[in-house]
Length: 149
Image (tube, rainbow, N blue to C red; front, side):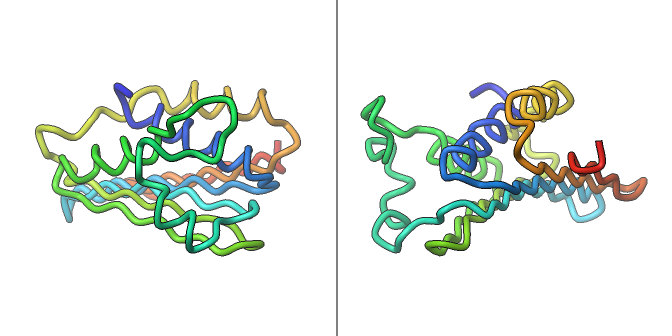
């Protein structure tokens, strides 16, 4: 994946596949601390401890349509290559939270990409899902809740 907006799209597609009715997407551009945080939280089925242990293995997937699941492992790799960290927390019946941090000015940090088009694609593809998009930067915090549209 060439940019972070495509990683976000991939993780949200996982949330949709897990039956989420609400997906929160947080992007925090904290330039003063040289940190970019991307966090995606859903209220889907969640994952068992057994699945959670395997989720970063690119040759493991719960999907029956293909034999590999590269999305989360590629996001983890992108995060770590830019001096960041990757965490995933999940509880069966409660949902999943994926958090990737990046050194903001790291030369290997992927570009953000076209977030606007990514979010429009999600809104039009899944109108039944409540998407909450939160973007923090030096100018403040912007929130878009699809329930308000």
